Length: 184
Image (cartoon, rainbow, N blue to C red):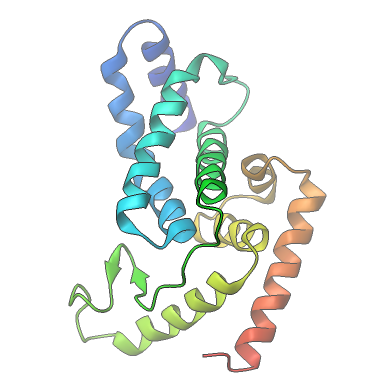
């Protein structure tokens, strides 16, 4: 689905076709769920927060500016929902020993033995990413996992393009230090 299709669906929703919202949910639910699992390390909380994000986006859809892109707007709502949840909890998320790759746990048998070494390398990087401050972690995730241009990273995080570049640069530097130091 292209941005133009997103705008068409949004227009349909705003014109009374609330069922069309399911198209946007199906398109973006994985990315929002992944954001929430990274923030909470808890699948149940992540599912609840994903749902809350889509409800808030739906309730505020008339505020979406057609000149912008829908995903960064939705992601910003998700970040705010996640941050509010963490603030309510009053504690930083617990670090889980279980590592999720593509929505599956290494512990639950969801990943076949073939390629486990590569998955463990990815898991090591993911654990290192989890120790980064949220600002750096989210900038790196958006840039390299979601493959967004720096301009869209800035939109998602509601910061300037130069601030997004700096977060990406500093996040990469910290990640390189951890990997070079062998912090496993």
